[in-house]
Length: 298
Ligand code: CP
Image (cartoon, rainbow, N blue to C red):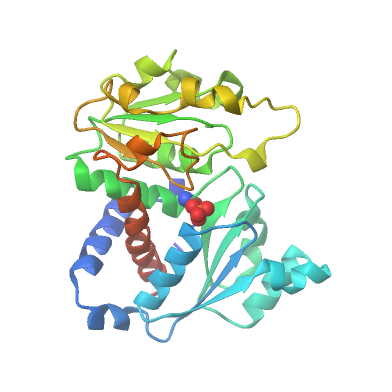
């Protein structure tokens, strides 16, 4: 495989290979790690804001000995009107080994894939509300650190499902790993029809005996003017607090891709509580992105 655009392009064996690669990288010496991608060059091009994904890709690449360059779109010739295609062709002409891109449009990466020669690897760092493949890899790896298998888990995902590329990628990846009990809950207007069979009737049913609870960010920037959002009622109806969490299994883990709206999607008590693995997700982001970069660039 030349590019990583969609988590559905990876089968169970591919996912397991990446997890093993991450295990290996985690235990090896810094000197060995710094040799893995020595001499390689990666460019990060993010048309949307990011803290975790951008920085973790940069740390991941440099931690493997690659040189990584961030082109800030707000200071680039995009601001002079350069088109998306011309921007990509210009970057590709400089022959980096990898182009790591985030874009607000669904399937933006598919639009440019034909502009890339085989030796420039395109890695999707999030496209619109479609896919966020490396987020699902770090999510799965975090679950794997706490649970013995994926098949028997009840995974509950709550919040703004409609606008969430995180939810799409995680549902796809869990399905590849044969997790059948995936339960979704959120406002009806934010529940895509394709997931109707996974929708819980209420938050209590959704949380009941869950093994993994994933809270999603409200993607305000993706709401159009006809989409209704009652932010004042959100925490009561769709937010997670310590009382609601008691419905889940005692050893349930709580996840959030970040950035989180504390007091709306998740209470501070739960976000900072003993069941929260949110910062483990962040740490695993560097490791899984190292596994991906090594897999594609070495
Ligand atoms: N989870 C995630 O994609 O976070 P950032 O937007 O900060 O990269």
